[in-house]
Structure formats: structure tokens, C-alpha cells
Length: 314
Ligand code: AP5
Ligand code: MG
Image (tube, rainbow, N blue to C red):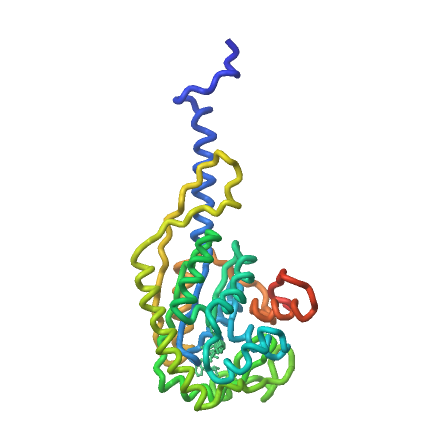
């Protein structure tokens, strides 16, 4: 009998090899899935979310998405979303959950294999549930939530000194982090502006809104962190009809980082990210445009459609 026609015996290395290769491949896929950073940076208005996100993106191969920056650009560009958002943002209130998910979801879908950080989303338990359901469907669950714990008294003093570069979301502070030339962005030389929601009355409303709607998210994530879930392999990743696709075990990590200044907080956040995601690559060049929000808006402005590019003008 022709031995090549026979299936290999179970004790033969020929029998074992394809299986072990497949197992190795699955193990590698799982390993690389688990080494992707999908981070929500969470904190009160003025806690330093934008400042710390910028530092992460500047140092590591991470893309950021700030819903506040996105909305401000929509408002500046007079888009449909911008027209709807203008009054709500100016008053320090929140936009509807479904609208926010729509704005964020399409951007995240293009980032399946990337490390990313979300600043300003989710902001309600409803948004947290919508985001979880969406990411689970894609097989790309959140990996880390960082809660920035900064006292209210510290925050209130910062806001009056804040100036922003609208197109990039870069944040300056007259005393803590002043621009090289007063009133102008370090990277582009373009003028800085004051946010219309950065006055004491509106800021107090944003803080109240935070305690009422956003703070309960921490309880939500704390309960998620305690019960690891199984993430099904999305249909598009199953390459063969007979391929067995076992759900992956996943546990969210929730960490609180406390401090009164971002300089105190940054080394803690940096160490947390570096130790938890040792494979995260550091950037070798300085980038100017560093947020996904500015890249997305810049594309929409130039009519490039739904795609995106990262770090234009490196
Ligand atoms: P958004 O832009 O996200 O505002 P926010 O959450 O209120 O947070 P901020 O951007 O004010 O603060 P931050 O934590 O980024 O702090 P920063 O780094 O700038 O949202 C704006 C609006 O959009 C919302 O009010 C809402 O209407 C709408 N919106 C957005 N997302 C939404 C959503 N998901 N659902 C519904 N509506 C949504 O730092 C603050 C200041 O402190 C700066 O001046 C900074 O330089 C300074 N600073 C930072 N570190 C230090 C330090 N170590 N020492 C001194 N000063 C420091
Ligand atoms: Mg911000």
C-alpha cells in the first residue's frame, strides 16, 4: 500500500506537526491580541486627560481619539454634528449617547490592530455599555481603564490658565506648560484659543455633570474587571468553514493613578503602561500631529472620505 495515501499514525511526528503548528499560531494570535493596548483614560474635566494622552502618544506607538477635540473641530467646521453640538458643549452638557457612539465607532473599527487611547469617551454608563458591545462584536475588547484622581481644588485653578490649539488638540497652560511664544502653538505657529466652556460658571456645570453621569462608570468598570469574559472570534477572522474558533478569555484592568500635578502622575502612568504592555514600541521620531481626532478631521476637510491617516506632518 502506498504509505503517502495513508493518514499519519497518531504517534507520528507527521500527525502532530500540523496540529502543533496550528496551536502555535493560535497561541501567537492570542498573545498578540493580549499585547494590544486599548485604553480609556478617565477623569474629571481638567484632570489632565488631554495632557497625559499627548505624552503617551508622543512617546509610544499609540493613536489617540479625543471626543472633545473631535466635537470642537466639527463645531469649527460647521458640520451637521457641529451644529448639533455647539450649544450643548458651550453649556457644559453632554451629547446623546447614540450620537457619540456613532462618531467614535467608525474610527475605532479602522484601528483593530493598533494601540489606542480614548480621551473623553465613554462618559456615561450607557456609552460604556454601547462601547463594550461594539468592541466585543469586533473581537477587540478594552484592555485598560485608567482613572485619573486629581482633587477638585487643583483642577479649578488650572482651567482659567488653559489655552488650546484647536486643529491638534494640543493643550497649554500659562503657568504649568506655557507655549514658547505666548498665544501661539509650538509646532505650527498658529494662534491658540480659549475654550468657550472654560469659564467658572460652565466649568462648575461640567464638574456637576461629571459627578452625576460620568463618575458611575468607575463602578461599572470595577465590576467588569472582576468578571473575566469570553470574547468570541469575529466571523471575518475565521478563515476556513471547518476552523475551530475558541472564544478568548479576557480580563479588563482598572487602575487609579492619583496626584495633584500631571508631572507627578505622568511617571506613574508611564510605568503602568510600560510594565503592562512591554511590547509597546517607543517612537523613534517626534511627531507633530499626534491625535487621531486631528487626522480624521483633516481628512474630512480635504474630502478624503472614511479612511484615516496617523501623525501627518511628522
Ligand atoms: P472635553 O474636551 O473632553 O472636556 P473635559 O472632559 O471637560 O476635559 P478637559 O478637556 O476640560 O480636561 P482634560 O482632562 O483633558 O485636562 P487637560 O489636559 O486639558 O469635552 C468637552 C465637551 O464635549 C463636554 O463638556 C461635552 O459637552 C462634549 N463631549 C465630549 N465627549 C463627550 C461624550 N463622550 N459624550 C457626550 N458629550 C461629550 O488639562 C487641564 C488644564 O490643566 C490644562 O490647562 C493643562 O495644561 C493643565 N494641566 C495639566 N497638567 C497640569 C499640571 N501638572 N499642573 C498644572 N496644570 C496642569
Ligand atoms: Mg481634554
